[in-house]
Length: 185
Image (cartoon, rainbow, N blue to C red; front, top):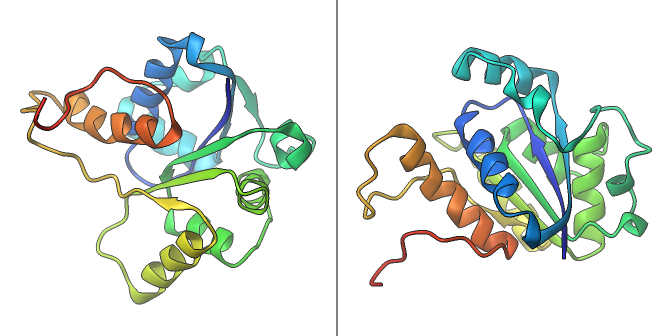
């Protein structure tokens, strides 16, 4: 059973974590625990883009960005997966440089040092050489860079359906079985 930490940073794209968390709610048999940490900027972006504070009513345990006593701040917490969605380039850069100055970067550091699954869903565009080198560093350390690039071959009709093409890919990467469009099937 998966123990997953979901981190939401202040990059644009709040539709992605909204869909991810709702999908996880619908499949409780596939994980033992979901923990959530959001930056203050993530809350502001969510409220701006989605017009609500629905993140506050989610049944997952929500941790403060400065709560270093969270179980996933240590390898002994045995979280096997961390999804950062969306992952700002600032967060990505701090992770790539080993700067654990908040719970998100500390948890990512733990996931990488324990050789577990770190999925950084970046949303920035275009990329600077600094971004590319930080992505390379995280890949070389064992992390997965998954740009929030939707697919169109399933013919999505709404923004939520389009964003779900990214979320379903993230769930696949996390080892969660998801009923989704599959190319050629």
